[in-house]
Image (tube, rainbow, N blue to C red; front, side, top):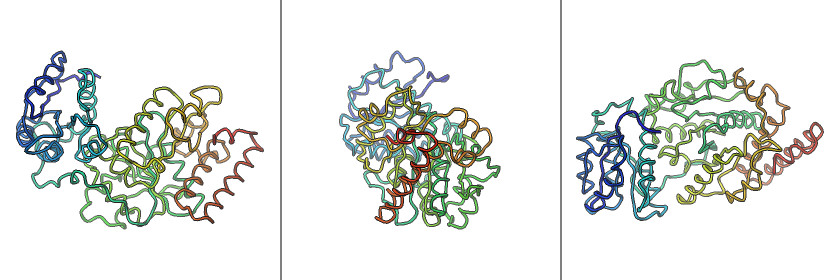
Length: 436
């Protein structure tokens, strides 16, 4: 997507020849303007503060101040800047540290002019809301806390509620529907406290899909983050008739930027002390907020559709997960919108991704649209529908995975078997196909 205005760019590399080559790669890009060059990390911070460019193209290895440290400082003095990190090495540690420092993309040298241009345009679009909240030229408070120290691994949370993160690298695959119905299924099966958090911060749909009319959101929690406690946080949540409690996304896209990765981790930590399960609905961009939250999650539920574009994006996600060394055994793959005689075959998906499918969800346009328009979850308006029953099966699988005690696992297996038995009476063989 070509930007309407010129994208201003600062190039940072300690080798003059590399800086010049990068300039040449962008020579035929009419909407990209190189406003400055820097030969060191310290110079990059100074120029970023003075020029406030849209994008900083940053080399990761420099003698006086490396790109990681420079990126952290730029985030404070030039908050509208988006960093793209460059390196001749593509090791997992470099990618991980770059993302934790706030970089929005990572390019391995050498790369083509097409790769560079595509990355710049993509990152520019991702930063649109940040430029609305903080106009160009506005510097952050010098006292703003820095990003997490580069290379410091995220700590796993203390024992408490279990966090299930719902994610899809491709839009339109039904993440919010999966998150909502899974949360309600968990509550129905266990009768324990369940929280649903809409972390699709710019355009979250959870409140609309549940017909919640309150005006409180995660943004209200952030305004009190320094003094926030469990009681206050729960009071900001909206109760739903299903029994779950919901923390909606901000009501306007420009408010998304007030919620940082550290804010979200604090909120999730408090929720773990009150709720047995927390289901987190997220957005498709794999930024530092999502990556840091994935490291905290007990289960990562990846939703995809049986279509080539979705398969391609999901394959890229699994490649990134491997590079970041996130344990793949915490990832459950959900194949949504399955039609028996159409789409990519499940076995081909598993072969391509080298990862098993946890559950297949049948596609029913009528019932899904009806649930969305009425603001009532599918699992409540038609609990006996095969799709609703699939959510119940999946929730039991997650409970068994999260609570691996033999007794609970046996109970989950027995409940799953009973569900299959009842469903076969109504539609012979359907649920067997859904589970494979």
